[in-house]
Amino acid sequence: MIKGDGIHAVGKRKTAVARVYLRNGSGNISVNKKSLVEYFPRETLQMILKQPLELTNTLEKYDVVVNVRGGGKSGQAGAVRHGISRALVQMEESLHSQIKKEGYLTRDDREVERKKYGKHKARKRPQFSKR
Image 1 (cartoon, rainbow, N blue to C red):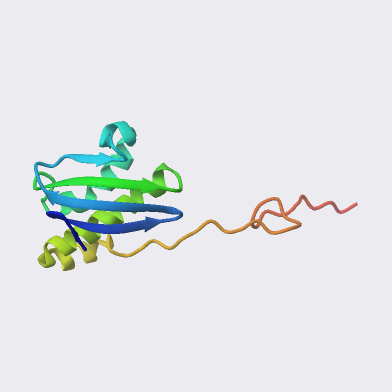
Image 2: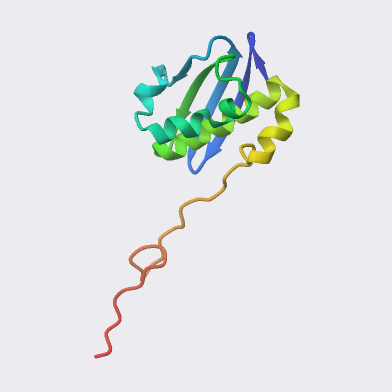
């Protein structure tokens, strides 16, 4: 879906949903109206987010504007990576095989398992007492 002069894509991970707007520019990345470093202070999260752009050598080519909500910081970073990957493929179809091979287009569908009654967590059992 094209919005204005750019591309819009949605990425998901755990319970986080990221709406990514990609447009031609100089490589500025803003997340929820903050700079990338301000929103994701951890280096690893910044690295995860930039992976598809670095893979395709388009880090300095596009400006990325992201609205992300839900989940924690790690899930949000994964959702943004998924959204950026989808937007890049929409922008340049030739990048599809390269991004797909790295697995960035696949939605990581692992979710937290629910807690069951009679257990401490989803699977952790109470301590067994013989007597």
